[in-house]
Image (cartoon, rainbow, N blue to C red; front, side, top):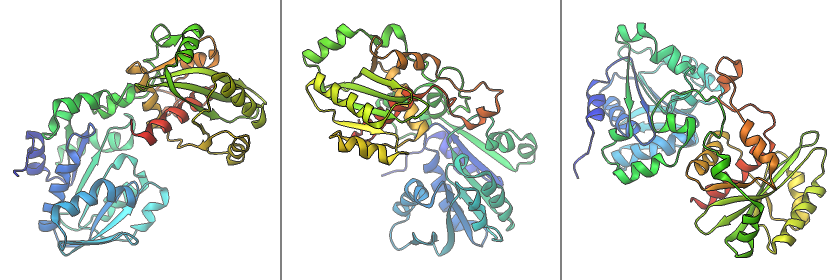
Length: 403
């Protein structure tokens, strides 16, 4: 079958001849595929010497890049040791490294490389990036980076993409990829993908913008569209319209324990029907509340996703007969899950029974752009207890069921 490349991919492949070549932009836009092809050409025809490849971790590098490279070249043309990270490709030695931690740069200190391929360079540690550039000292050595955009003050943008002196000297070239630059994507798939992101994650992952996270986190939440009455919730319970109930718990001591319960419809819409929100509370107290809610609903709560930081409290709920478990607490992906549910009108809140949740939805914010904490790219960590419980529950439920 003929290789299907877009004009942008063809241009990148033919012209990525600078010292540093960067493909950035939307997810699934074909930037990694064409960088893989370009890297294979470089491995075969670039200057002699040892090469470097890096990802957030060795495992993510293998999943995102190496497995595809292996499929492209076929068995017999490579040899990879997953334990050491040493790859032989077309007879050339390549060191594969994880680069997310500050001590990662120590693993390449003193090395000399003839080229470097960095997958998702914005999530590799700044010190590793600096060290790797310095290590590419072989005459004619080239560097190839892929990444999705991050916040606009990220050092990859400020120190490289925006550095006019690097561009003027021909030391850096960059290509902005859009979804339409991937010639293999169908219009239906592109529309589906656009519906999978919201807020700042839409700006970055779909539009490929280096966008700042600011303002209200859940800007698509509307009291008019997403608040439902107690009467409506009671009707949905009686009918019954909910196929199951799920919950999330954020622990606290002086801060409130926040617990949310959701009814899940057969078309996977989520209705928050109840909340527990109390400072200086105990595991036993929130456990009794959950048992009371199960008695009222006449049904067991299928799963209670909890803050994994306090395993003893999760065990306490389990001893009461509750189906509690720890949760994946990833922030960005969890925020995007909740944002997208609101955007697509699949998440609702009973405002009469969940007033604290409604209050947090209206006040949960990112730092102002001039706040030093804005560089952390995460919401303000205050008065967000119900928001955390919501994220734990909905993101993990959808993640495990791949809905």
